[in-house]
Every structure is written in structure tokens, then in C-alpha cells.
Image (cartoon, rainbow, N blue to C red; front, top):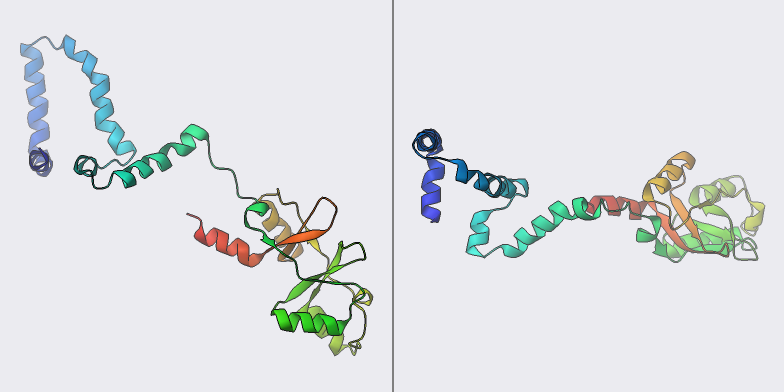
Length: 211
């Protein structure tokens, strides 16, 4: 059967006019009224495979039925269940936040940055709530100004801590990052403490893997 279909496909320039003329002559010679019932199902069989990119040869051979089924699922999932919701901060945030307390010193901060190979961390108050951020640029500027390494972090002009809800969409997170030029977001818990973080690296990886 497939061989016959291949021959027809290769000679469509001839086959199509012949079929049209044949159908016209048949309609003149025979009452075509009973065939009206076949218009809808035949049209469906002719158009539907093209709509979902169905490869009939693969289905007949049975060698790629899983791939074809997946294609149908992807094609119609959004139409049946609606579009997938936007990714949220919770979907890609990381557990664990590098931090020091406001009573810690510049020397403590330098040691943390060097040991953990990071560029910034959160500063917490006595209630474990974030009051700001320390960055490598802030520390270097402080040292350049002659600030002693024994100086407590509470005495520095900390960078603002950017907070956002775990339920917020990534679009909202990106908008806040763009507006504040801060690319590390802290995700607060219900009590105001922080245990999760979202950085530009996670966002870039998410969109790089998105199809």
C-alpha cells in the first residue's frame, strides 16, 4: 500500500487533474447524493494529520508511535487545558543564603567572600532578618577609603536587600532586578527571615533550557 501511495505522491501533477475529472464525470453518470455523508469524515482524515503533523508512515510501521503520541500531546495540551502558567520564583530559587550578622566585621566579610567564592551576601539583624547586602565593590571601596577591617558591618552603607515573594513570577523578578540593578533576590519566609535566594545565574539557565 505504501508503494502505491509513493507512486501517487510522485505524480500528483497528473493524479489530481485525473481524479477531479473522474469525480466530475462520475457525478454526471451516478447520483452522488448518498456520498454527502462521507464529506465530513473524509475531509477530517485528509486535513487532521496535517494539522498535528502526523506522519502516517510512522504510525503504520509502528516504529515511532511514542514520538508521534508525544507530538499529539504537546500539540493539544494548551488547547485542552489552557496554556502552562508562567514560571515562578519558587520553581528555580535555591535553598540557602550566604549571610553574616551586622555585628560581624569587614574582616569576617572578606573571609566569607574568599572562602565561598561569592560576590555578595546578606547582612542580618539580631532577629535573623535581612537589613542589607554587602558586595565586593562595597568592601573594596571601604578599604580604599581607609576603613579598618575591624569595622562592624552595621557601620557601613549597605546595599539594599531586594526581597520578592516565592509566588511571584519570573517576569516580576526580572522587572525588579532591572529597576534596582540588583541581581540577587532574597525570598522571605512568613516570619521575615530568609532561607532561599534567586540569582541571575538561575534565571539565565532557566531561559536557556526553555523551549
